[in-house]
Image (cartoon, rainbow, N blue to C red; front, side, top):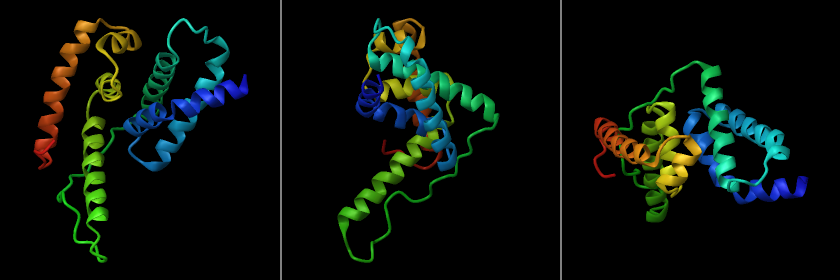
Length: 171
C-alpha cells in the first residue's frame, strides 16, 4: 500500500504543488500546507475505492485541505505590486538567465492575482490551468459544467483586471 501511495504522489506531485502554491503566499505556509495535503491524502488513501480517477480524488482532498488551511489561518493573502517586468541586465550578460527571471516574475504575479480571488475561484483556476475539462472540474467541485464555464469566463476577466491594475497587460 505504501509503495502504491508513493507512486501516486510522485505521479501527481504537480497538482499538489500548484494547489499549495495558490493557497499559501509565504514559503513557510506553503511547506505547512503541502505537508498537510500529504497527510490528508495518506489518511484518506485506504478509503479511496477507485470509483473516480486518482487525479479527481487528489484534487478533492487537496482543495478541501487548502480551503480548511486558509480558514484556520484567517488572514488575507497580501500581495505586493510588481513594478518591473523584464529582469535587469545580468552581470554575466546571459540572456537566458534574464529571460528565466522575467518569466518567473510573470508567474509570481499571476499567482499573486490568483491569490486575490475567492477560494472557490482559485480552485477553478487551478483546475483550468491543469487542463481539466469543464465536466471534470464540475465533478471535482460539485457544481454543474455550465456553471464552471460561466465562472471561468468571469474569473478570466477578473484576472485580466487584476493584472492590468498591477501594470501588466501582456498576459
